[in-house]
Length: 367
Image (cartoon, rainbow, N blue to C red; front, side, top):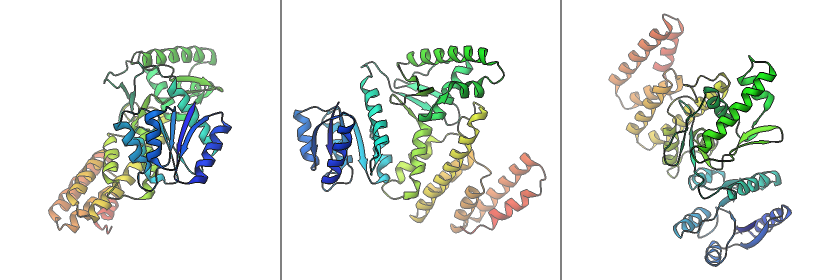
């Protein structure tokens, strides 16, 4: 495997070169100036580009875009100390994104992904996994997978949920076939694994389900997942909402079309369902605070109303909406919203005393 490295800092360039050589990778060239790398790629070839982002003049994002425009098709791995670029990097379909200082184990993981990507045949398809609301898997042509059995669908969802960690044979059988003895459970597991591989092959995805070191897992090189991408964005939320990234975060919010796998009713998914629900509410609040501070109240109201259609009893979202109406002196909307919420709470929970306390907390908000 031939690698090209671009980083404006000489010590970082040397360190990455040494790390790659330790893993048996041929470093074909290394440049401090992005334009020199672009010129080199017009004449030479490499299997992967390890690219820094924050550089004077042409930064890494700009270079990656330029290469795409010139039809220079090379897998890109961004290597940078600045985590705020991760969302944009993944939107460029980067093969991977590594934070400095680069660790050997993390680099090994990236090299495995590169090797797996190289094995893809020209007929390989890229698929999209939708986990919000209900599981759905479609290929790049919009063809949805047909699951032979409900258990095949559930096992696929379970392996998506487990991510890179995967799951052992015993763990899978305990989660999905705990009402069978071990011999029968193993038969069902093997049959279901076969059905998943056949279903994936039917939409052009091959060799995605592997068994390695006692663990079953999915290789995601040919597949994207809305929950994965949403979680990546949520993890970067602490960097703040800015004019540069607010539109991207609005796009991530639009991915949330319902709770994680809620229409599949998988008990094992409940923990992540709660985690992503909390992350969604936190992201809505962060985006709305930015929009409100920049006098985009109507857009903020639209996002809050959409969020409340999924999480109608969220104290934080209700308080924020009522506070926004109040600051806009729209007391009619305040009254209408509280009355509708009160009626819905009584419909759901009867005359529970907590309802009045809940309404008081919303009415007396001061965000």
